[in-house]
Amino acid sequence: MSVRFVPPDAIRARFSRAMSEMYRAEVPQYGTLLRLVADINAAALAADPALAARLDAAGERARLDEERHGAIRVGSARELATLRRLFAVMGMHPVGYYDLAVAGVPVHSTAFRPVERAALAANPFRVFTSLLRLELIEDAALRAQAAAILARREIFVPDTLRLIAQAEAEGGLDEADAERFVAAALETFRWHGEATVDIDTYRALHDAHRLVADVVCFRGPHINHLTPRTLDIDAAQAAMPRHGIGAKAVIEGPPARRVPILLRQTSFKALEEAVRFPGADGATAGTHTARFGEIEQRGLALTPAGRARYDALLAQAREADGAGSTDAGYAGRLATAFAAFPDDEATLRRERLGYFRYALTDAGRAARGTGLADRPLDALVEAGLVRADPIVYEDFLPVSAAGIFQSNLGGEERKAYAAQANRAAFEAALGAPVADEFALYEAEQAASVAAVRDGLR
Ligand code: OOG
Ligand code: NI
View 1 (tube, rainbow, N blue to C red):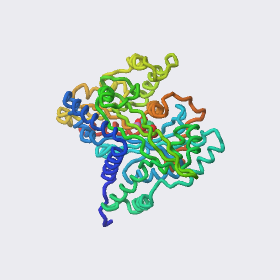
View 2: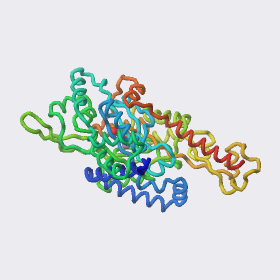
View 3: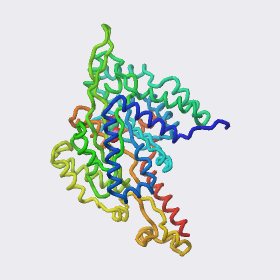
C-alpha cells in the first residue's frame, strides 16, 4: 500500500466543519446558536475549574468546540444503505435503533457515529438518520406514488458513489480524494429551494404527514438541524429569547440535576421557507417547514438498570393526568418524579445506574504489587487508589427525539401509529446490524477496570 490515506477521523472532522459552514450560510440563526453556546461554555468552564479539569482529563474539552450532531431523513433502503457506506468512510457506524412510530412519527432511526474512545475524542460528529416507513401511509395510491417518486431520485452525486467504492476497495482515500469526497458528500445534504413535485402532490403527501412531504418532495435529504453541545442548557434556554430566537417550551430529557445524566435538548421552531413547485404551467410559489436549530447537553451514560429507572420516571411525569409534556406544569412534575433518582456520583456508581471510566490515582500507582489487585472496585475508589469519571452518553433518546420532531411538525403531540417497532426491517434496509449502545459503554467501562487491576498487579 503505497498511498498515504487520510485517517477517517480527519475526514469526519473536515466533513463536520464543512456541514457546519454550509448550514450557517443556509440558516443564519444556527450561527447565532453557535456563538451563544460558545459564550455559555466559556462562562461555565471559567466558573467551574473542577469541571474544566475533568473535561480536560477525559479528552472532552478539546472536542467541545467542534462537537455537534445533525439529522437527516431518507426514503428508501438503497438511500439508507448507501449512507451507511458513505459514513463508514468517515469512521461513523450505526449505533442504536430508535422507533418513533410509537410517538406518531412514521420513521425509524439510527445514529451514525464514531465508536472508539479515541475516535470520539478526535471528533464526535454524529448524524441521527431516519428512514421513512412508507407502509405507514394509509392511502394505498398515495403510498405507491411516494414510492415511485423516491425510486426515481438519486441523492448522491457520481463522485460520491465512485469514491465510496474506491475507499472500500483500496482501504482509504488519499489527500486529494478525501478533499473531493467531502465536497461531493456535502451535495447530498444541501437545501434545495425547488421541490421535485407539483404543489398538489406536495399537499397530498403533506396531509398524510408533514414528514412524508419533507422526505419525498425534494432532491435529497437536506440536513434539517445541527446541534452544538453546551455545558449549561438552562443558561442556553434562557439566553435564546434574548438573542431573538424562540425556544421550544420545554427542555427534553431529564430535569436539571447536580450530576447531568443522558441528554437534555432544546430547539427553536422550524423556519417557514420559500419553495418553488414545478408545474405544467410554470412554477408555483409555496413554503416548506423543516429546518431548525437545537442545543444539547450531555451527561452520564446510564446502564440498562439506570435507563429503565429513567424511562419509568419520565413516563410518570408525562402521563400524570395524561397531560403529556407540553403544558406549564410539566417542568414541576418532571422535577418531582426525578427526586427519586440518585443525584450524586458515588451513589450512581455504587448502585450501578451509570457507566464510569476507572483509572489509578497517584496513590494507586504507588500501591502496585501490594496485593490489592482483586479488591472490590468500590473499596479501591473509597481508599483513594482509583478514580471514577462518568462516561458521557453519546447517543439519543427516543422520547426526546419524538418531542423534537413534534415541535417542528406543527406543535401538537400526535397519536401513535399502531405499527410495531421493526428493527429487523430497518437492519435489512441498512444492510447491516446496528450496534448496541449499552454494549459499547459496558465494554469501555470493563476495559478501564481491567487496566486498573493490571496496574495494581
Ligand atoms: C431528528 C430528530 C431527533 C435528536 O436530537 O433527538 C434528533 C429529525 O428531526 O430528523 O435530532
Ligand atoms: Ni437533534
